[in-house]
Image 1 (cartoon, rainbow, N blue to C red):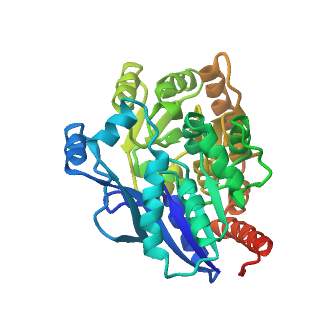
Image 2: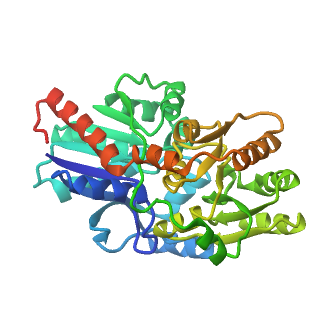
Length: 403
């Protein structure tokens, strides 16, 4: 079997950790004797766009190299042209460039792969120039089935702006994989029937996310009490703006220290607010994916109060380190937490109730080995095995080869 992967989520030379869960999935797939090529979708920006992004202090996401290899996975690129007028139409006039851009990418990609034979196309993401739409266009040219995996904000944030387009792409796919039941139900709320759907979560690397010496790490970080931690982007959707309030409620009933791993637009404000409240919070900023387990192992409880979340793989990663989690009831978080923590329902006094649940876990900890064993069920090997089953089902139905 040979699979053509098309993805909106992928690493750049200047951001090698981007799309980590795509890279880890493909690393695991290599051990199953399945051949694949993977293409990231990027824009070829004109000088005017590059200048504009520089003026606005935006990272230049345009890729000049023909490929980028990370952890043994070789990402190639397919692109569409983007000029200042395109930016103006998209950002100011709110015009949708998705179909135009996707057709350009599909043509570029077709030229690059037309001499190869693929059995199936697997798209990850429905953002920007949606990988799923590009997969549909190529599927028609190559006469092979396509699948789409939806990860979170593609459905939660992007689908409401182009419902008909998204429903068309998803309904015509051989299979659509959602990383949580919550995400599937959200897609259904926008008109998707769901008859070709399957739920397979993202996974973790058990050899990376594992228990380490908690007390040793706490000492190295200058922490000496029970530690409540947060890992993620410091942005509004993660409810990072409410971290100082949650931390304050916790310290009012339990003597605790806090560890925040991540960065984002809200960081400065959060740090200032924590100082005003005299909270002992250690901010370590953004760290590499490989270093996250070190910090997770310093935590006695990790929190994920997000306002929206596709699945919440960070929950499983924490559980892999033997750390229980308190999370909100939004998106796929309850499915990720399972019986390895506490889910707090949205509603009045959310921050106070959330803090009380954290204290409850600090006072009544869940056995770390139990959490670890739960997380092992989400190993990338297990997740990829489930995806290969979907490939084989699809190919049997369409009369192609299988693994």
